[in-house]
Image 1 (cartoon, one colour):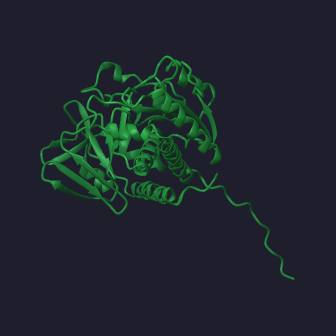
Image 2 (cartoon, one colour):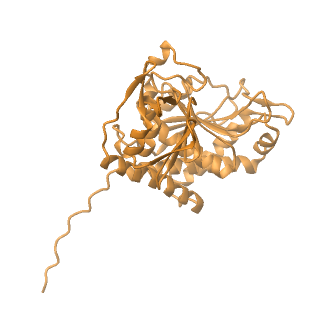
Image 3 (tube, rainbow, N blue to C red):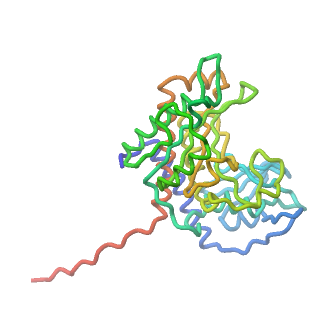
Length: 352
């Protein structure tokens, strides 16, 4: 592996230390949370979460915004919102944060799928994933141009392929094996892409996209990971009967959160882009995966300023490097969680 850039190395150290130390705290402060049913959903008092991770709890705005904080991280919750902010990074929730009586509550599933894997990665019950073979999927292609901005004469499929090729080159330099779903402008059914990734036995699947919005003022980066079972996706107002189905990709829900957080944080910081956070959906490219996977919307082609950046080779190279650094952040966490090999025994030196 080639050395990581100093700025990224520092960032990796902060995130990994945050997770590692919080995991140790959680391991020494094992508490039985007083979970309670509210409106048919199991909720956990944030006072119990604070105690579990040795965090101080304070109202930033009375009865509206609550902050949990220790020396490693800060988590902000807002009443009635379906999101939290961990060290200023937004993470979408499946259920709203509730004020019940004089206490604030987070749904147990949202605790399990967001806070637990990020602050207690050492306690994730599944094996630590390998990270050597990475599947890069440049979105759209061929007959499917994706998002288009005719004013600047560009489309999504061209930019995703260029970023994907640049990212592949960078990851190979860092010692990873890379397989791409497409290396040319060809039509490729989106449902076939994750099946190809499974066939190639990848360790991580990364789908590259660019965004659009009706309002051209919208900008920023957002990362999508698979919605866990029994929860609504970020675009749904409430859960439906189909949300109860457990999908193949749900085996990696914890690790999806870890890699999604790492990549979103690295890309937004390095690009200086708006951090639109971690969001959840049951996209066709994510549901059948046999590995952790994510879809990154690397910016808005519909935004005049961001679109003008995206069409420049220098900015696309910057995106590729940021994505690679995010993958390295994820690797740093995984490496810290792997058991250290025991040193071989040595014979004592005989004295003459």
